[in-house]
Length: 126
Image (cartoon, rainbow, N blue to C red; front, side, top):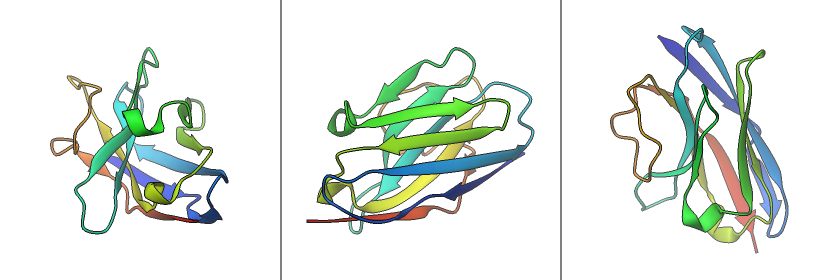
C-alpha cells in the first residue's frame, strides 16, 4: 500500500508558476510509475506528467511540454510538479498517483493505476 498526499495548489494569474508536491508513504522501497493527472470540470481525467522512479524516464502530455517539469526527491519520497507559464486551461484538480511495475508511461486517464492522492486545486485566471 502507498499513501499519497498532495500540496501546493492554489490560485495564480496566467503566466505565473506553481509547484505541486506529493508526499509518499507506505511501501515506497521499490520503484513505481508515478505521476500527475488532472481533471477539469466537465472533462475527463488526463495524465499530465509521469515518471518511472527507477530510471527517471518521463512522459509529458503535449499541452504541457516545455512548461511543466516532473521530478522526484527519492530520499524524502516526494514527487514534484513545477508548473511555469500557466494558462487558464491548466485549471483543474491535480492528482498524484502511483502504479507498481509493470507500468507504462503514456497518455490516458490512469484508470488502472492503483494509488491516488486526494487532489489539489489549481486555478489560473486570465
